[in-house]
Structure formats: structure tokens, C-alpha cells
Image (cartoon, rainbow, N blue to C red; front, side):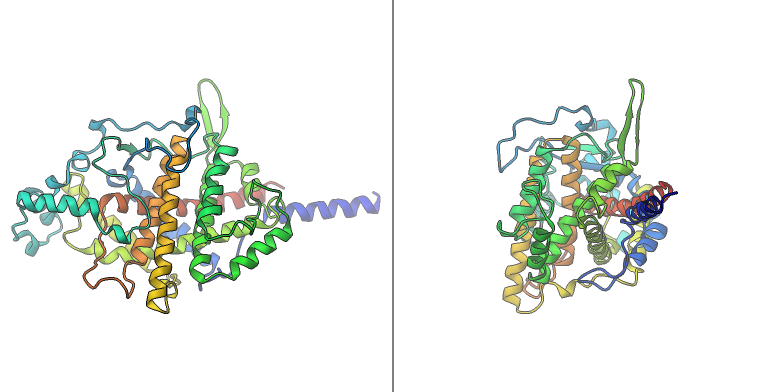
Length: 449
């Protein structure tokens, strides 16, 4: 064989092997003392199985959402007409009565007595927990207006008539065909207007212009010049984008026959989003930001542990025995999260001068609040559902992490309502699934020789 041909074939083989390994990111992550390999082992072997079991339960599978809010930023031309974009809401009898009844029913003496017996909380069981009408109304108002100043995202009003329960297991996140200019407009608005980036700095691979490596270098030079909080904000958004891209690649419509649809991993789609050669080196950076997002939400789970441990904290569905088991499962998950040895240190953010830290925190909070509003501009209803849930979950994580700044009032106390808890656990469930799917894609790419 011609020597030149042999050399060409060798280089081709090396290039193919390199492409297969592009998603094998490794080593320490920026701005934190943790390595990718430790996260992979911890998530895939310990956290992922427990999360999946918890997300199958009634408490976490039913999510109340308003998918009919108008876009507050621009006039939407139309809603997505693709059949896979539709969301099937639950009928009233499909949702456990304890979830869909108003909050006042959750505080009756009878219900609390049953739950306390289940948890063997004799001291609490001896307390009269019945509430007056006036106190019930106050509880409703507290739930509705609870610590608005500490929230990083909008929550759909559970009392709004347009809000409906959705069974997340029957409406899974997957590729719907929603792409192109409509989808680009959402992400462009998020990156260009809400990530503290001046318009003169071009984001790598933006669909608005032809991005070269020189523009990418300029972008990362700008990013590294920002404070750690603004860098972290961008990396969280990039990590969320990467996670969603992995979900769509992992549950892609592979065939659509008249009698059956087949969903599964699409390696070509995955490569187009993350292959270093196809993304001008951007793909691996996106994956590293995914791991950074995982650390943030994992740390939030740990900080939520004291709230969940309280005897008065119930996962209420109206089935006392199952509710007790669910709380035990959740506590087991949070204790597992706490066992991770390399947690992100949130005290490194919003440190220094209290006045400046409080101002910076408020800027970040408002920027993320704006991103949660943009989710109402997504024209694909299924994409809107999962976009709202995951931004609300991340917003809840940020609320948990930064609700105890030195500038916070002494009387402030972290509280979580059902909407926030369901969003948080489902959000980290999505990130955990993304990391698990990465392992699957690595194996598929290794077979593609």
C-alpha cells in the first residue's frame, strides 16, 4: 500500500478516536475544588438511583404549572404546532386528593395526628395542631407571598385558574422537533440580555453571527475578567443549556411509524452539540459547566436538610403511610448528598463588603428572575413545561444557598413550599440524568469505531 495512504488512514483513525473522547472531560472544575471523576462515581453509583426512585412517587411526579401565560417580552407569532410539543394535563381525579386540596386541609388535627403517629413523634402528636380560620388564612397568605425578596425565580400561582397539574412521568422531556430561529431566540435572549454580557462581546457559536476562534478568545478573556459571581451565573446558564441538550439527544425520535414511535440516543445529534471539532472547542466547556451546575444544586439539597428534618415538614398527599415513606426516602437522599466529600463552598460567593455583596446578589437575583419570565415565551408547550420546572428548580437552589447573607434580617428563615421542593428535586434529577447519559454516550462513541 502507498505509504501516503497508510499515513492518511492512521491520522483518520486517530482523529476518529479523538472525536469519540471529546465528552470524556476530566480534572478539576474552575472556581471550585472538585474533579469530574468524583462527580461521575458519586452520581452514577449513589445519587442517581435514589433520585429516580423518589421521582416516581406521587408527591414529586405531579407538578402544577401555568402554560398559558403570555410572553412578557415580545409578541409570540404562534404556538408550536408539532404534535410532540403538546402537554396532557391531569384530570382532577388523577391527582391525589391531598395534593390538589387547598392548604387549610393539610393542617387539620386528624391529618397531623396520623402523620405524627407514623413518624412516632409522640411529643408532637400530643400538641393540638388544629388552626383557627384566621390562622389558616394567614398561612395561605404566607404561602402565596413567602419570602418574595429571597426568590430567584417566579412561581406559578397555585390558586390561579389557568394553572394545571401535569404528570411529569407521562410528559417526559425529549426531542420534540422544536428548533431553529424560534428556539435560538429564547437562548439568545437569555445569553445576550441576562448574563451581564455587553453586546460588543460576541458569545461563541451564537446563531446571530459567524463566530470564529478569535471571538471565542475575546469572550473568555472578558468572562475571566468578571467577578466570580458573574462567572458562576454564566456557567450555571451554560450548564442548564448543556443538560437540556443532552436530554434531547438521549431521547431523540429515531423512527415514527404509523403504529409506533421509537425514542433513543442519537449520537450524531449529541456530537453536533458537544464534539470539540464540530463546536470549535466549545462542547467540552459546556460539559464542564454541566458539572458545575450539578455541584450547585447538590449543595442546595444539603442545605435544605435542616428544614426537611423538622417534624412539622410533611410530604402531604393524603396517604399517611406513603407520605412517611416518601419523607424517609427524601431524607435518605439528602443524607446521601451530604456524604459527598467535595461540596461547592457557597461562602466564596457574595463575600466581602456587605453592601456591595447585597447589591450584587440582587443583580443576580433579578437577572435570573428575568430568565424565568422568558420561559413563558417558549412556543413548544413541552419545552416550556420542562424549561419552567428546571429554571424554578435552579432558582430554588439559589434561594437556599443565599438566603442567609449577613445582610439578611435576623428574623428571616428558610422555608420551602411544595412547588419549590418539587421543582428542586426534579431539577437535580434532570442534571443527574444528564451525567448518567454522558456515560451512555461515551460507551456508544467507543463502539463507533
